[in-house]
Amino acid sequence: MPPRRLIILGSTGSIGTQALDVVAHLNALHEQGVHPRRYEVVGLSAGSNAELLGRQAERFGVRDLGLAVVKGANPSHGEHYPSRATGSGTMRTGPDAAERLIREVECDIVLAAMVGAAGLPATLAAAELGRDIALANKETLVAAGSLVVPVAQRSGSRLLPVDSEHSAVWQAIQSLGPITPPCDAPRALERIILTASGGPFRNWTKEEIDRATPEEALNHPTWSMGRKITIDCASLMNKALEVIEAHHLFGLPADRIDVLIHPGSIVHAMAEFADGSVIAQMGAPDMRLPIQHALAFPHRLPGIAPRLDWREIGRLDFQEPDHARFPALALATRVIEAGGNAGAIFNAANEAAVEAFLSGRIPFGRIPALAAAALDELGAPPIAVLSDVLAADAEARRFVAQAVR
Ligand code: NDP
Image (cartoon, rainbow, N blue to C red; front, side):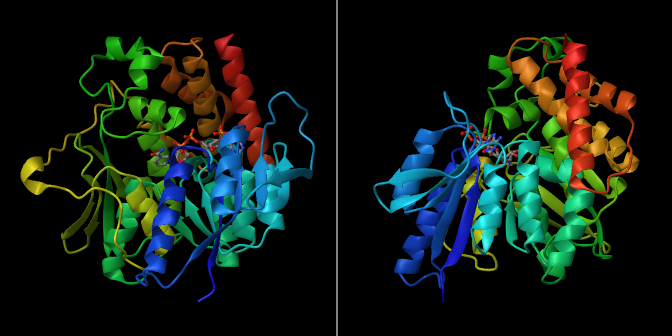
C-alpha cells in the first residue's frame, strides 16, 4: 500500500505534538506488520514556534513547512528553508502560510490542530480539495460550519472528529452502520449526550468564578491542553463550542444535544437510540486515543494511551450543569438557532475575551458576558462565502476590544 500522506496544521501545539507521537507509533506498528499503512508527514505548520517546527521537520523528514508569524522579521513568502535531514525544503511564511501549504502540497489527510478561527481558511481549503480532515480545530466549525460542511459534502471530504466527545459519538453511531461525518442525523439516533469534566471551578461559587485568576483557570483537573481550550473548559465555553460542533458534524438540532457534568472524564459521550438503548464510549482522558482513531480509521490498532482500571475507578458520576454559574453553555442553543454569522461572532468574541482575560485586562466572569453581548449587538446576518465569516469575526473582535477599553 502507498503511504498515507499527512499534513499537520498546528504541529507545535498540544494536539500537534501528540499527533506526531501517534504517527511514530503507527509507523512502528507498520514496521512490525501490524498496520497495513505507513504515514508520511508531508507538511507541518505552526504559529510562531520556528524552533520546534524545525526539529519536527528534521525528525520526520518533512520538506514543506508553514509559519504564520516570523519573530523579529517581516514575513516573506516562499522563503527557502534549509533542513539538515532532508537537504532542503520550502518554508511558507505569513498569515496564509497554512492555507498555501494545503493548496500546494498533495496529501491524503490533514490534521487540523491549529487553535482558533485562524484555522478556518486552511481547513476550508482542505475541504474544497476533498482531503480527509482529522478535525481538532473546533473553532472552524463553530465559526463557519454552514460553509465548511456543504463544501465537504460536495467534495467528499470526511471530517473525522478528533475532539474526544465527537470521536465518542462517532464511535457510538458506528453501531448503526458505516457513518462518517459530516452526516445528516441518523433517524434511529434520538439524542447525544456530551460530557464535561466541569473544569477547575466545578464546585466554586459564582462570585469566586467571576474573579478567578488566569493561574486558577489554567489549572485543569483531568486534561492537559493548550491555554485557550483550558480557559474555555473553565468557563464551559468549550462545551458550548462542542455542542455547536456536534450540530454541524452530526446534523443534529440543539434540542437533541445534551450536556452532563462527569468529573472523572471517563465517559466522553453517549448516543441514545430510538429504542432507548444508550451506547457510551469510554477511555482514559488521553487525546492520543481519539487522534489515533481519526488517523487510523477504519482500523482499530494497539494504542499508546493508558488503559482504564475499573476497580480503581469504582463509580461514574453525572450531574446537570449549573447554568447560573456557567452562563456560556446556554449560548450554544442560541447560536445554533440563530444560524448565519452567529457562530463566527460568538467564537471570535470568545477568543478576544480569552486573550483579554489572560493578559489581565478583564475578570474571568466577563468572558461569557462579552460573548453574549456580541451576539446581542451584532445579530446574525447570513453567510455565503468565507469573506462574510472573516468580516463577522473581525467585527466581533472590534466589539470586544472596544468593550474592554
Ligand atoms: P495549542 O495552543 O497547544 O496549539 C495551537 C497550535 O496552533 C500551535 O501549533 C500553534 O503554533 C498553532 N497556531 C496558533 N496560531 C496560529 C496561526 N495563526 N496560524 C497557524 N498556526 C497557529 O492548542 P491545542 O493543541 O490545545 O488545541 C488545538 C485545537 O484543538 C484547538 O482548536 C482546540 O480547541 C482543539 N482541541 C484540543 C484538545 C487538547 O487536548 N489540547 C482537545 C480537543 C480539541 P505555535 O506553537 O507556534 O504558537
